[in-house]
Amino acid sequence: MTVFEAGSARRRRIAAAALGVFAVVAPLAACTPREPAAEARREPERAAAAEAATLRAIDDTTFVRLSAELSEPGGYFDTDNLVSNERSYLHALDPLRAIGVAGGAYVGVGPDQNFSYIAAVRPHVAYIIDIRRDNALQHLLYKALFTLSANRAEFLALLTGRAAPPDLARWDDAEIPAIVEWIDAAPPDSAALLDARRRVDSALAATAVPLDEEARRTITRIHEQFAADGLDLRFESHGRRAMPYYPTFRDLVLETDGEGRQSSYLAREEDFRFVREMQRRNLVIPVVGNLAGEHALAAIGRDAAARGLRISVLYASNVEFYLMREGSFERWARTVAALPRDSRSAIVRSYFPGFAAPPHPANVPGYRSTQRVQRIDDFVAGAERGGWSSYHALALEGER
Image (cartoon, rainbow, N blue to C red; front, side):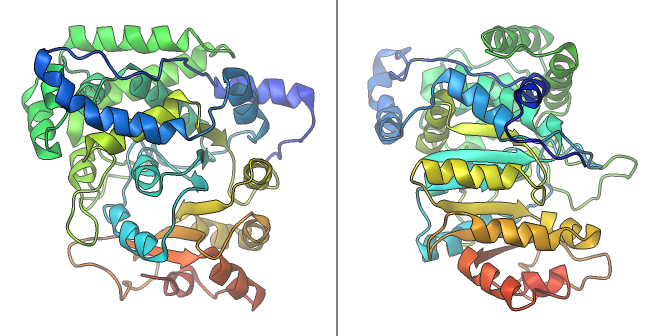
């Protein structure tokens, strides 16, 4: 994999063009109520805006520059990964709460499961890093959709190409099962999808770095896939059939934490709106990079340190399994050791049995994957002692 050459103006321009990074400017005032009774429902929005108001916004130019400068050229991974295959992803929240992880800088891989961790941790800035350029483009789509959406119901309607309900404000305090039931009952609407595509394209037209035609086609393809499959969308690998245990998007939205509470970023309006305010303030930064590369993750650490922040959560999914297999795990461990952190900083990883790996003893019955949380200090100490013989051995350590 080609390494991004820090300090090269030419490479920064190439990376910016490849990313198609954009920033959408939107007012932070609460949405205009659409009915008299909506005044009471504005409280979650006021609370989210008040929380986000304590965060230092990143201006559009800096957002574009950071996404480009922190990035490496993209690489290949054999999945579309439009949604996660980790049904257990919210089981990480309980040990994170027990440790007291909050604030700081969030770093994570993959699509929208990151938003649930962000909603729980309430970081000051978030960096979403993934080797696949398509993941960065998907996060640009999400950025536009968050900016355009008054609430969770409109967000899911725009994402899945459904017509939003006319009494939209009434859904502000709805339980997430009711919103999911409404989305499931609403048929795909070609006119609604065309309108959603138009609105997204209009947001993308405000980009500081133009999207090339390939990037636009990729964003359109991703959006149309969500519309075609709706909440039945699943994780897919290229050239391999979808496994029956992969959760649907519906499953992930309705998933619960270890205490049985629905805790995705779409479960509560105030959580959704906190993430939305972060998006509006350019505080969710898409980065293309290899976790074991020589530039991206280290550059993220330097940027967080320059903001006076430590890494609160480093969500690595099961990427370390592949890093061990390809022989780059030691470089990953050295980079992690150099990240700004404190005693509460934690790595979140996911473990899957298979590839001669046995089931995990902490696995929750009914779940294929197992979430693990380990303090970064403990990970660094273990790596310095000689590391681990396998990903299974690594996954045995941690808070859960």
